[in-house]
Image (cartoon, rainbow, N blue to C red; front, side, top):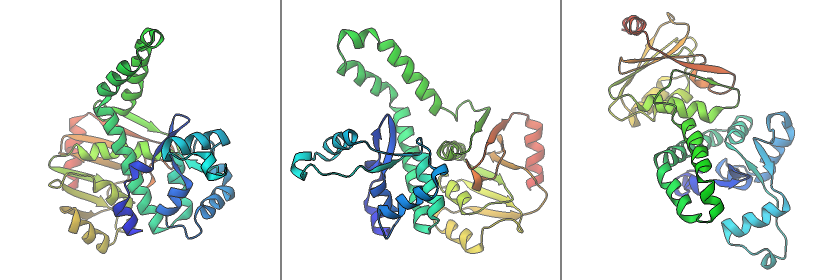
Length: 301
C-alpha cells in the first residue's frame, strides 16, 4: 500500500462518465488494500444498498464499457475476444461512504489522498477556466456552436461560481453526504491563514489533523478542546508536529460550540465538529462582528 501511494498519481485514476468524475471499483480495491479485490467492495455495496444511491455509484452499461476501454486504455474489444467486465464506478460521495464501511486504516489514508486530489483538480479547473473556455471556442467552430457559445459561457460561470466559495463566504449549508465539498471549504479557510489558526472543537480527532496538514508551514495552530472528549493522543500530536510543526493544545471545557479564527481577523462558526463534516446537515457561518471576535480571542488566551 505504501509503495502504491507513493507511485500512483490519483488524478490519473479519475475518469469522467455520464458527466461525473468517478473512480473504478478495481482501482479502489487496490488503493484500499482489499485482499479479495472488487469482491470486497461489491459486497459492501450489496450489504448497504441504502448508502449507495445511483449518484454515489453505478455499474457501466455494455456500451459504456466498450467506449470506456477504447477511450481510456486504447483497447479494442475484438482483440479481447469480445469479453469485458462492466465495472462499478464511484463518485466522490460514494468513495467516502465506501471507506466508512470498510473501516480500515488503509482505506482511511487512501480516501484522504483521493479527497485531496479532487480538491486540487477543482482548484486547477477554477484557476484555468478562461483557458478552457478559449479551447472550447477554438475547437468548436461550427455555426451551431458559435451561435450557442454565450450559453456555454453562462454554464461555465455557473459551475465555476460554485467553486469560488472562499472569497465571499458569509454562510454555507451542507447536506448529509457532501463530504468533499465541506472538506474543500475547510481546507480553503485553513489555507487563508498567514500567522495563526485557532480551532475550538471539543471532539477533535485525527480528521482535524488531516485538515490542519493543509496549512502553510509557518502558520501556528492553537487547538482548544476538552480533554475528556478529545480523541487525540500525545503521540498523534507529536507525530503531527514532526511533519507539520507549531501545533499547541489547550484543554478546557469552557466552550460548547465550534469556531475557527484566522489570523485574529476572521471568525467562523461551525455547526458540527470537524470530524463529522458532511455526515449530517450542518452549516458554516462567517461572523462579521469584530466585538465577538475580540471577546472570543480573549477567552482563548
